[in-house]
Length: 529
Image (cartoon, rainbow, N blue to C red; front, side):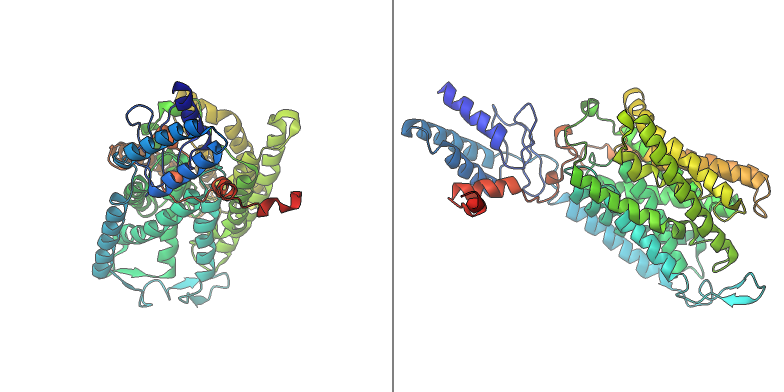
């Protein structure tokens, strides 16, 4: 009997449904029945299997043991029935999202709709759509309602495709990378319109224009940057909570930096990139998981997942000049053109330095796809603060060159130090793509202001803006992390991190192949006959 039980346990480890985490030393299962992960039950029996999972178990059990003697098959069949009987009556683990996620998501959306009904109206064209601006030929130009729409669409693509696909590098977390990115961005842009609009009420109303929705997308970018720091280790509910708090704090810091300090940060190196990165790192520190200090088998990429991530890189790289110039003042002027050119050249120089340093620090001079996916974008981040300043084409290229170097070195050497010494498990390396280049951009802005590269810019205020952004990020991120750490938000256990199947219905090709074999389907093997 003991030998037969050993066979059953071995079968569950090796041929369990995709809901069971392979490589887990104990039989702690996670079954995608409503996204639930499940704790250990009595003995070694998995908990709360769905009827679909039980059918898969029985099918595989039949396929594996058809050749066994009748008596042994009967004994093992009894073991399978015991697993089925006990599993069906066991409680689900707290990661089941069937009630808490729909309730929280719908409540947040209903509250947002009510606030929109009270405060938000269309821009009537008197403020914002048709403002007159002096252009390079000193004539008045009326900004038409749709003049900035191309810039808006470029930024929109960056938010939903660029950031989403950049995070698909994890081999079993692609659904969440793109799917949760869409969720957070869709909610974040609504909340951002409200939080930023509070500071610009006209007659007690928030008037929505193209410029307003561009800024709403910008506020959402902070959340997506922070999302990268905790990717694979948080639940959708936790991330919705983070979205509310982070955008609210962001709007306060943005108003302080732009309206009160009157600092220049057209490409938002400080108020978006540095803020989003260090906010996310503070959250990651509070949510530190000792069980992941030695790594996780799913915290890595495969060939095709890196290819998908590279799609995100290319989209971001192409549209970053629009990101840095979309809100340049005055619109449709040489100032906006300067921001486009500076970003364009900084990105190009950054690519060369990132490739060079990646080859230099890797074994046998080979390129590391992690460096190429991320460090090639650092130039766009770093040049953001002074994108609209007259720093010269060579100045923009110099900033990009330095950004590519520090970003690549950060991925190679700094990430392990943060994880082992500071307890900051930065999944996507946002510190190296957004944090360090964001600080570099802030410092470049201070130097440019001191050299008089932009009228009205003060080096003192630029430094204060950088300090404010970092301060709000670290304090706000710590508070947000403490709230997210509360045990009822459905966060995944360590063994289920970096795996889509805990919150998504995930098709499994291996299951389909084995089930077809169990039913005598040899169609996929006809070519071998």
